[in-house]
Image (cartoon, rainbow, N blue to C red):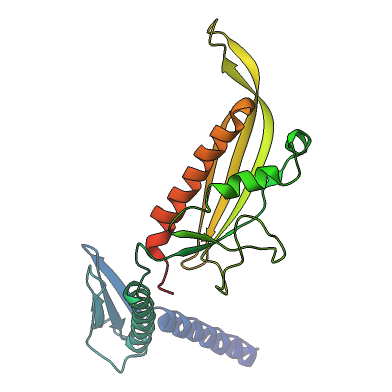
Length: 246
């Protein structure tokens, strides 16, 4: 009976020692934050503290014991972060130092045929008339050069020799009911409005813009001119300065 009691006591003491050992291993470092600065200490079995490393407000770390495991992990993490920042800086420098096109150099634009909603398709006087109307606003521009999608077409622009486009424009035109003001009475009235929309995408650097213009359907030509002007401004002012030189 005494032997069994002794064994149980020894087992209990061993378990307690194991628990203390585990706790001691998991808490052998102490981190103090003072005014935003971080100090990491190693704590020995007697509770004595040794400063391993400290990190200031700017993220700079001073290591006092480079052989300490915690310090080694901190150094490795810093080196990895520094390498990542260096690669980011290199990419940024490459993009900023790359020569850009000059203001008078051409911008090659892929202008897709306008997508018409069902109402606009019914109202279109001839198939392709709306697309040609939009396209006609770009052909005389001294900088914007349209790339012809259909090589067989004998329309406003011949295919350009460029292998690709700098910008893609996807126009959409629809007819919708809207409210306007009666000029005579000043009261609101229902009108049929034409709505021009476009998604403008730059290939390099990647960027997407959206513009829209609307007005009375009877002033379709006037609205399309305002719409084309908006598209041109995006291409020339927002996208153009960032396009790499050809």
